[in-house]
Image (cartoon, rainbow, N blue to C red; front, side):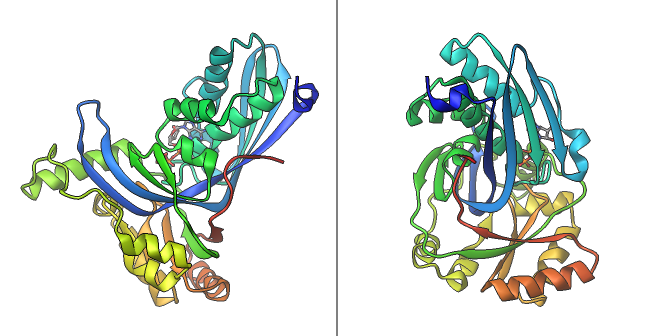
Length: 309
Ligand code: ATP
């Protein structure tokens, strides 16, 4: 039994993510779209504390719309704990405490970060000692974004986004995130994309010809070149997210006017990620946008995945 297994509680921190590139293919029979994406883990974190208990329970606090987070088996952290227990034949339970900083339904994978953190926390608390490969498998079963929250850093995701390859990324990238009070439903945004593509005459089940991440995006990450990365920022879901939330375009425009190099919708939105050339400019952008009544946060990436504190 590991040392952690004898401790009364385990505290794990896992990051939210942005997709600096998100190419979406056609919809497959199982309902999922093929993706080619580049994730970057950023310094906005979810904290999960796991304590020994006979049963499974969960509390959630933090961000404003925390009331919309389910506390039952629909919660990804709860599902993660139960999946690990089943996989390892652990017969006890856990009391999970989630402290959220990542906006709910914000396109930043907050629920996925909670799931990754719960896996790591319960594995340590229970002393189940799963190998990294088995942890990855369980993470992928919980959701397409969960493996990335486990690994962190910068990575290319293919398949549903769960087949990960680490991408070399030098230095640090400064982002200003503009969050929204109300989230966007990921399935609604994907459905809108299918409709928009249909209206444009493309068959919804005909994937775009190329689903590769463009080489210049990978080069920009490798050389730590924010200017080059700004030129490659891309999200196939952006038009669909903007259809649902037309104000998002204005947020990007304001961010660029305030000094950001470029901005994009993060994942399925509505969070906007504005790439800045340096920390000082990011501070300026944050101040300007706050003055305009928006809710901006200065973060940086890449950062590590789920870690025990
Ligand atoms: P996605 O990873 O699908 O892009 P997202 O990052 O936009 O999602 P999340 O905050 O992860 O948004 O959650 C989306 C929905 O999942 C929420 O509206 C909520 O109903 C449900 N959910 C399940 N577990 C959690 C959790 N631990 N935290 C937040 N939402 C959760």
